[in-house]
Length: 198
Image (tube, rainbow, N blue to C red; front, side, top):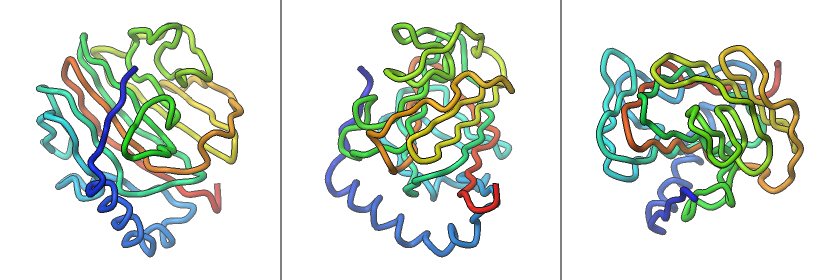
């Protein structure tokens, strides 16, 4: 099982940063906003030895393994991202992370981004909650949309809904985290919409 242990000091710093962004988020209610500025990783905390870079306004890594952990805690939200991964890359998106010191499918909703199965969970699946059929995501650009509304989660992969209102009450809110290992990974966009005027 993939997971991370984060030092207590780093976790406290992450929580403090969430408060400082409250005014920005209030202005963005109902409108999408990017968690990548195209210039830096100020909205994220990095863990691991991945060589995260921003090149031509894309987030790029091609060595090591690591995490990007958002400094923003979310309850209900809509997330849209466009990503590319190499032939051997393993990648997962975690939403509503409830424990910054131990990120795993036991403390967050883990969404598989790669077409290599995690058990019976294909790309777009929520590990431990909702399976998806096999779908090719390696060596190409993909779009992923995640909607969390109360206890319901839905996922769209490349324009097709693959998870429809999966019901679960374990994690009500938390940060977003991205874990990548075993290959190259790129992100063109990573946008969040806070509910209000969907």
